[in-house]
Length: 477
Image (cartoon, rainbow, N blue to C red; front, side):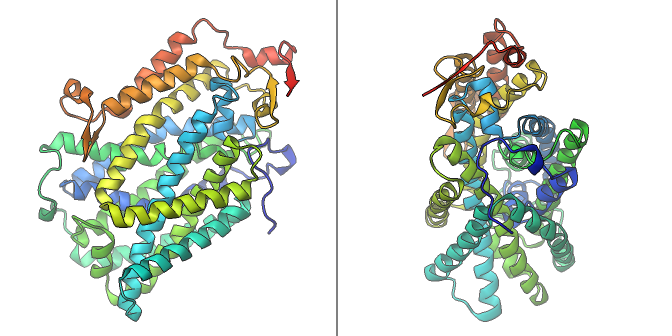
C-alpha cells in the first residue's frame, strides 16, 4: 500500500472513496485499546461504586457525542481536516487556534496510550518470560511501541483504516476473553483503597468522573473527526448517514473499552494504579491475549492520534511535509511518555490533562459549530487553502487572516474554563461560584459561544455565497 501524500490540502473527489462503514470501523477499531480502556479506571479510583461509575461514563459519553459528532459534517463539505476548515470562522491564519488545540489533544492521548500500553506489556512479559521491570525494559518497550506507531502514521489514512478494521474484530474478541478472565473476582462495591470520594462528596466526585472519564472521550475527537470524513464524498453519502455513523462509532468506540476498564478495575482491585493490578490479577492463560491487546491496540490508537498530529503540524508549518511533521511530533510524544512515567502518577496526570484540554477545546468546538450553522454548511473549499499556498485574500481573510471576534470569543471561553477548573494540584477562583463543582467545560463553551454569537451578529452569515459572486479576490504573496 503506497504512502499517503496528502497533507491538509483539499482531497479530490476521485480520492474520496471511504463511506460511513469505514468511519464506524476506524472509530471503533482504533479506540479498543488500553489508552481508552484506562479512562474507565478513573471513576473507581475517585472512590465511586460500580453503578455510579457506569452512569458517569455513559452520561458523559452521550453528552459529549451529541456535541462533537456534528463536527464530522464540516470536513464532509470542505474535503480537508477540521482545523483547516475552522478557517471559515477564525480566518485562514486564525485556524491555527484549532491546529494548536488539536496538536495538544493528540499529543497527550498519544503519550498516554504508549505509556499505559507499555506498562502493561512490561508487566505481562515479566510474568511470561521474566522480563525485569526496570528502566531499561520500560525504555525499550516504549521505543518499540513508538516506532511501530510512527510507521502506521507515516503511511497514512489507508493503512490506519485497514488496521482499524482488523482491530475492530480482534480487539473485541480479546475484550470478551478479558471479561471471562476477570469475572470471578468482580465486585460492585467501591474500592476501599481509593480512600473514599475524591472530592469529599458523591455528586462533586460523580460530576468530576462524568467530565474526566465520559465527556473527555468525545471531546478528544473535536479536531480528529475531519481527518476521516474528508475522505467521504457528499455526492455518494448523505449528511444524515455520516452523522449516524459518527454517533455509532463514537458511542461504541468509547463505551465498550471504557466500561471494560471499569469492570476490570473492580475485578483487579485497581484503586491507585491500573496497569500493575491488571497484570497481577490476570489468569495465566490470558497473559498472551493481554499482551496482544496492549501492543496492537496501542499502535492502532496512537497511530491515528499521531497521524492527526502530523496533519495539525503540517497546517501550522505548510512548508513541512506530512511525513516529516509526523516524525517530529512522534519524538515529542515519546519524550512526554518518559516524563509521565518518571514524574507523575497516572491518575493525577490523566485528570489534569483531560480537564485542561476540555476547558480549552470546548469553546473552539462550539464556535466552529455555530459557524457551520450560520453558513448553512456552505464553504469555499479553495479559499480555506490560502494560508497553505502562502497567499493572501479570499473570503476567509478577514483582518490579515484572523477573524478577531471568533478568536477573542475562544480566548474568553478558554480563560473562563481555566479559571473554573478543579485539578488535583490547582483550583480555579471561579469554583466558589459553582459550589466547588468543576463546570469548566460548560462555562467555557457557554461563554465562548455567547460571545461569538454577539460579536458576529453584525456580520453577514452568507460569506460563502458571496464567494460565488466573485466579491472576494485572492492575492499572491
